[in-house]
Length: 203
Image (cartoon, rainbow, N blue to C red; front, top):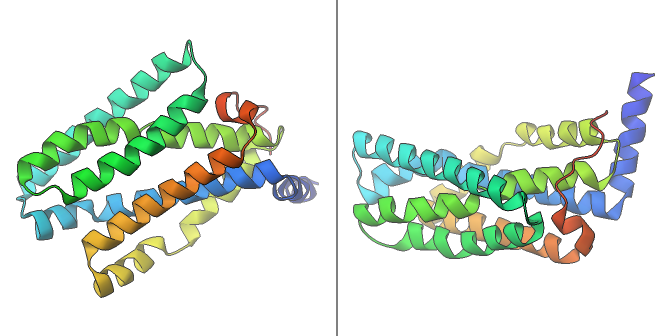
């Protein structure tokens, strides 16, 4: 039956060491989405931006992300994904703290462009690696990663921010999750760091 097939695929994914590694990396990336939700609040309360400036900042960041994805696409036409993944993670470790901690409104607009450029490749590469790690289980991996929506990450983030402040928790979450992703990349076989072939998309 369909239920048995899904259950069997879940066992395959969780039993495979590399499948667990890349699935864990993709789940860790979900943590990077949480500070983004609180970014407008931080820009208003800490940086002192008006609503119009916040909206402009969001647009600039969105355009930079699109450009980053286009550059990734061009890179992958002639290179593998491994160096792009490492460069993206290392760039995040440098540019996100710089964007967060450099004072001034102008600095936010100047730094959000390279910040989003380097962060853009993380999700598509990690997702592709997670889908390809255990061939034939791409649908199951997608279902497992969707379960992060059941975890109250935003509520937990907000609670911690109320205790130590929004800036420190944003910094710790992004840097910590990115370092964890890098640790996963180091443990993965070289052949699994590069290919972006997601394999057969089945349940």
